[in-house]
Length: 114
Image (cartoon, rainbow, N blue to C red; front, side, top):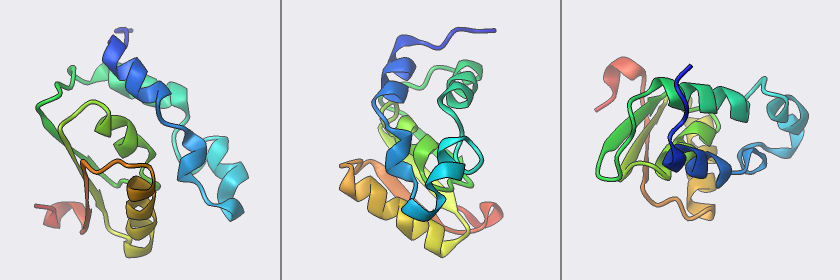
């Protein structure tokens, strides 16, 4: 397995999964049923080409926003796409609260995304 590059590990470690769950689903989310575990995100990052600081990336099916938040530490811009407006708005609020101003939230089906 390819190793995760240092910037990706730093971005991963800088984002707390606890910031991306609400009280009622805390237990299920922290165990990996709602948002990916840190190990899963690390594995995904090891499979991707290295993301450069001047690039824009897209995360389709963004859910709670955890993976997009990690990507925000790597890319210049992140386009977060989620079809569920309620889920997308909760993620948008998290991004703002955490100062992740380089994440653009789009409510759309994947085939309709910009």
